Length: 297
Length: 241
Image 1 (cartoon, chains in turn yellow, purple):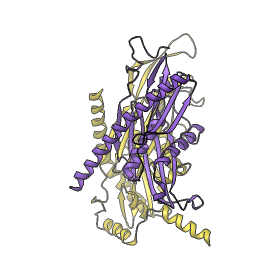
Image 2 (spheres, chains in turn blue, brown):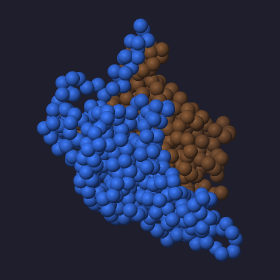
Image 3 (tube, chains in turn green, cyan):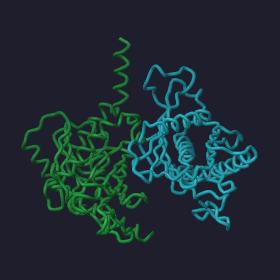
Image 4 (cartoon, chains in turn orange, red):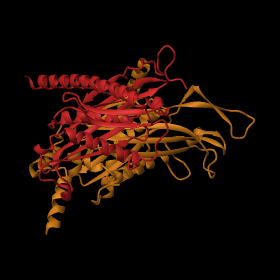
C-alpha cells in the first residue's frame, strides 16, 4: 500500500503537472492555430546564435530557442583512419544532458535522453556505415591515406530544456561546424608518421549541412517547435532532418501512438516547408554571430 | 619554469596579488528556481538551484530541516583535452560533497523542513579555480532562488610559486606542483567554512597565503553584492516599483 502510494507521488512529481483546464487550453489553442505563447502552429520560437564561445575548441556555438539553451563544441584531433575506410576521417557525436536543465538528469538520469538525442543526430549527420550520404564529407578529413586523418569530436550539452531540444542541438552543431577552423597539415616526406600541423593557416570546414524540423502532433494538428507543456500533451512526434537541397537526411518517429502513413507524409512535407524558413533564419543568425565574433577579435 | 618574471608579472600578465576578471549573470536558466553564471578569468561555471521542493527519496527526508543535494559535472569540452567521463569520477564526487557541505552551512535549513534543495553546477570552461567558481556561482543561484541564508559564501584560491604568494591561480600555475590553498568564507560573519590545501607549505608562509586567499574572497564578496544589488534594482523596475 505504502509502496504504491509512493510510486504514484513520484510519477505525479515527474510530470509537467498540467491541470485539466490547462491541457484543454493548449489543445483548444492549437485547434484554432493560436498556441499558448501566441505563435501559429508552424512558427518557430526566436533563435539566438552565439559562436566561438569555447576558446579551446576548434569550433563552438550556443543556441537559444526560447528557453531551450544548448552548447555544441567541435574538437579536431589527429588520429588514424579506420582500416576499412583508409581515406575517410572520423566523426563522433556525444550529447550530455546537464542536470541544470532538469533535476531528474542528475547522476545517470539524463542518460536515456542523451542516448536518444545522440543517435538522432548521428542518423542525420553520419549517414550509413560506409560513410555514404553523410552530412559532413568525410574524405575531406583525410590527411595521409591509411595513416593520418582528422577525428572530429562533436560534443553537445543541454543547459536548459524547454521542449524541442533536438532542433536546438541540430542548429548548434551546424553553427559549431561552420565556426570550426581546422589547421592545414603539412606532412614531411621522410618519416612515415611525422606531421607538422600548421596552426596559422586555418581551413574552414563546413559542407552541406542539415537541420532538423520537428513537427509533433497534438490532437489532430501538427505543430512545430513544441514547448515542454505542449510536448507533454503530444501523442507522437516526427523529427525530420533536411539539407539545403531539400532532401531528407534522417527521420525519427517518437511516441507510441500509431500514425497513418499519409499523416507521416503530410508531416514530412510540413517539415520541409518549415525547414526552409528555419534554414534561412539560422544561416543569417550564424552569419551575424560570426561577424560579431570577428569584430570582437 | 618561471611563474613570476623579474618585473613581478605572472604568465598572464597579472601581478601576484591580482585576481582574474570576474563576471556574473543571474537568471540564465529560466526553468530553474535560481540560476547564475560565474566567470573567473577563463573559468566559466553555471549553477542552477531547484528547490525547496518535495523530497524525491522518502528515506532521506528529514523532519527538522531541508535536505541539500549537490552535483558537480564538467562538460566534455571544458578542459584542453577532451574529457571522457563528465561525471561520476572521484574528483567530481569529492567536489560535489565539498560544495554541498559549504552551502549547507549557510542555508537556513530549519526553515524548510521535509523539503529538498538541489544545487547543480556545470563547468563550461575550466582554467583553474573551478571549485571556487562553483561555490560563488552556487551562492548567486541560491540568492536568485530566494533561499534564506545566514550569509553569502565566497571562495578564492591562492598559491605559492617562485617564493611569491599568488592569488587566484589559473590552470598552468595550478598544475605547476606548488601548493594550492582554497578558502571559502562567510564575509559578514568573518568565518571560514571551507579550507583545502594540497602540496606542502611552511607554517608562516601558509598563514600569508591563507590571508591572501581570504582577501580574495572578500573582493569576490563585494562583487557578488554589487551584482545582487543590480539584479534587485532590475526586478524592482520590472515590477514598476
